[in-house]
Amino acid sequence: MNVAIVGVGLHPFGRFEGRTGLQMGAFATRQALADAGIGWSDVQVAFGGSLGVVLPDSHGDTMPDSLVTELGLTGLPFVNVANGCATAGTALLMAASAIESGAQDVAVAVGFDKHPRGHFNADPEVHGLPAWYGEMGMFVTTQFFAMKIQRYMHDHGITQQTLARVAAKNFRNGAKNPNAWRRKPLSEEEILASRMLNHPLTQYMFCSPDEGAAAVVLCRTDRAGEFTDTPVFLKGAALRSRRFGTFEVFSPWLAAEQTPAPTADAAAAAFAQAGIGPDEVDVAQVQDSESGAEIIHMAETGLCEDGEQEELIARGATEIDGELPINTDGGLIANGEPIAASGMRQVIEVVTQLRGDAGERQVRNEPRVGFTQVYGAPGVSACTVLTR
Amino acid sequence: MSASAPIDPTVATWEADRLQLVGGRCSGCATVTFPRLDGCPKCGSAAVEETPLSRRGTLWTWTTQGFLPKRPYVGTETDETFTPWLLGYVQLPEGVMVESPLVDTDVEHVEIGQAMELTSVEMATSDERGGVRTFAFRPVREEQA
Image 1 (cartoon, each protein chain N blue to C red):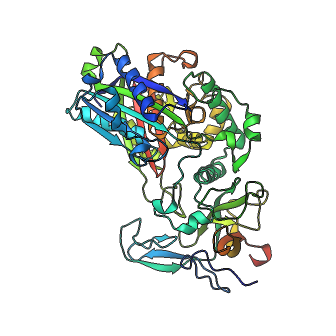
Image 2 (cartoon, chains in turn green, orange):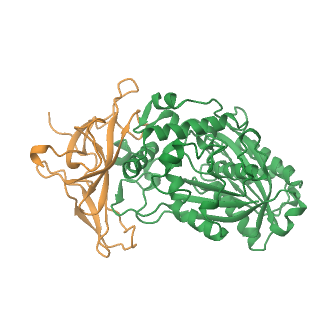
Image 3 (cartoon, chains in turn cyan, purple):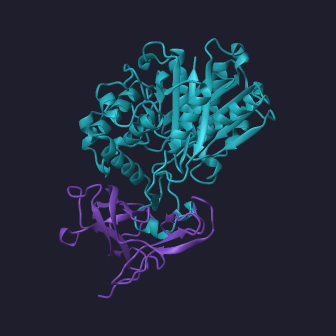
C-alpha cells in the first residue's frame, strides 16, 4: 500500500460523565491534526465510525458526521461507518483505499463510542435468531468466548493459569498507559479468584464496554515528509467476514466441519499485501475481548503455532520486554471497548511504539514492524501491518 | 401436574416417547442446520427440507452460565436465587453441532467428547406462560451406552 500515517490522536478510554462521544471524537481528531501539523480544512476525505450509525437514538450515540459541526463545515466527503467490532478497522481501510485510488491525498479516519454499562444488548430477532434461543438463556455473548477457548484449551493444551497470565499482563501494561481505563495491576491469583462468569473465564479475564475516541491522519506516502519526520507506513490492511463453518457468537448450531476464522483470512491477506511475514512482527495488538481471545488470535494471525502460547506466555515472550510484545497498551482488558475506537487505538499504539514514543511501555530493540487485529460480532475481522 | 406447552412447537417433534430436534437439510448440498433455515447458508439454495435430528451425539465444547442472563431470558430466578447451569455444543451424526443446555452433570463431571442424549425439561418462566417445556442434553448413562 502507498499510504502513510502522519498523525495520531487519542481521547483516553474509560467513563467520562457529562462528555459526549462526539466531543471525544472531536478531541481525538484535533489531536491527530495537530500531530500532523495540519488543520481540518486540509483534510480531503474523512471516514468516521460509531455505533451511533446503527443505534442513533440510544444512549447518546451520535452520527459520526456530526463531527463536521465541531471541526468545520468544509464540504469534504464524510462517510459514516458501522461494521460491528471491525468498525475502526473498516474506517481506516476505507481511508487508505481512498488514498490508494488516487482520489485524495490526505484523509482522516476517526472512531468514537460511548457505551453504558452492559451495552451490546439486542433482541435475538434482530440477529435473525428464534425467540426461544434468547428465552432459554443462550443469547449471551460471553458464553461464546468461553466455549471457544474451552475447546481450544482441550485441543492445544492451554491451561487456565495461562488465561490468568494474559489478563495480569494486560492490567500491568495498562498501569503504564496514562490513557487506559483500568490502571491497577491485578495478580494472577486475584484474577483466578474473581467470579466465574462462564467457565473457564472469570470476571477479571473479560473486557467491558466503555467510552473513548481515536483518530489518525493518513496521506500518500510520497507526501508524508510534508507532515512528519516519523511517518509510519500502512503496508497491509484487510477486512474479512466469516465463511461457512466458522465458530461465531450467537450460533444455535455450528457446522461439524470447522473453517478457519475470519481473523485467519484477514491476517493472511494483510501480510500478503505487505510482503511481510508474521515472523517479522516486532510488536502486535490483538483483540483480547477476554484473555482466551488473545491466546487464540496469536495463532489465528500466524504470530505463533497452535499450542505454542502456553510456553511463550509462561516465559514472558508477550510481555513488553519479551521477544513478541502483545497488547503493550493493556489491550481491551485494560482499555475497555468503545467499539468504533478500539481498532484505531491498536493502530495508534503500534504507531507510538514504532516512533519510539511509548515511554514506560516502549518495547526494546527499535521495533520495525507492527501488527493489529480486531475481531468480533457478527464474525468480522480487520488486520493491519505497519512499518517505519 | 400436566406437562407445560413446548417453548416453540416447531423446534422439536415434542413427542413424549420420541423427542427429536427438527433441523433443515439442503436438497442441493445436504448441509444440515438447526433450526431449519429458509435458505442454505452453504450453497444458497432455497430447497431446504425439515429433517429430524439424531437424539444422541458427543459433547464438542461447554461452559457454565455463572450469572443471571438478562432479558429475553425468561427464567424465574433472581440474582439471589440464581444457580449456575451448563450449556454446550453437541455434535450429531448429521454433521451439525447443536447448542443446548446440559443437565444431569456438573463442572466436575462434564467432559468434551462424552456421549450425550436429548431430553426435555420443564422450565418455570416469568412470562404469562408460567412454564414451558424445553430441550436439553444429558450424559448417556453407562448402562444405556
